Image (spheres, rainbow, N blue to C red):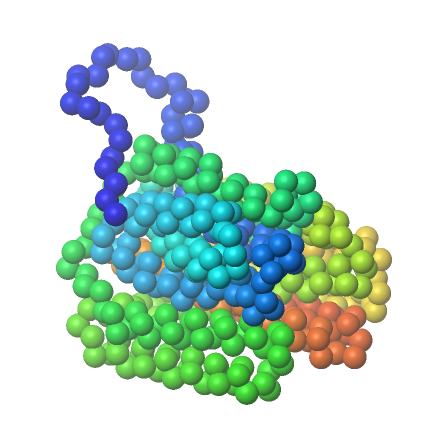
Length: 474
């Protein structure tokens, strides 16, 4: 889908006064606003649906399988096609693919809102996931293009990263408000004005991206990676419900490994590989991607298990659960702004290490808080996890994107976000499995938090070895 630049119409522009500083600052923020709006929609739809699904199931007479596909189908397609979206962006232009993804996402959101039955809604959610997979890789590539100066880019990456934490944690709160007031269809209708504004801002304020027509798409490799990620995500989702020893879970994990091996073999033989293995040999690239996996594992595992604990054990409503999780959300925006400002003085490595250590301390504190701690004792751990994750996200994002060679920014972004999605799915699956299999839910919750703390600590050690000590100068 081609998009033309807005702007001049061939008429001479009248003389005008130089733009004032506030006008220039507003224009400089427009690409960030456009990209973050698209990314916010994508992540919000991962969590906002959870509160609405019971109501949707009743109104559309959906089976249990149908309800699961309404939730998981979006995540499977989103995670599976991220590398495809990155490759298309590098080949056809990241702005074009980003805008195409927003259009697909917005149109499918409208279809979800108008769904007359459960099968129609499931198909619409699958298409919505495809749109999300086209949006996310291009979002980081467009920010790298729009903010070439390292300090401005770090601030942009920080705000982009904070959108994930805010959207994920605000999803239950917003979903509860919408479902209890105007109905579940508005969970999808709110995407329409956001998507329209996102496309308009992008076309007006984001320059066209370079194309690489010489980058042919390696379809066998793309199919293999889609199968590997989708099978892995599906197996991890089912592990939380069925248990890790279930034959379907084990079969899914085995098939995912087989598809990953097929992908690696194909990449060695391909003339134009989808993910050049040289990229993975870069310590900054591969290390940053694994760090993203680990901190998403810790953060989303915490949000998921905390949500279950608040609703099932403390008997909070969906709205009260969203409010209870707000301390973690509130810290993400503050941390991202602060890390973006500090990175030019300290470099990325100290920020990533300190953020991971703080988040590890927070989850360790939760694990040590006792069997049934008062909510007040959990506020500080949630704040530490939210702050530390967002504080480290800026530096790890900059590390991965800075290590990408010219023409591979979309692929690097896709790799980073694919590993993060795998980390989220693993954290949620493990947390759900521990809560379901523990005789005492409190024990399962504390073990989950302790494992999350260990993941954060591992990320801190890995950051010391892989994140450059100083920011890249452009």
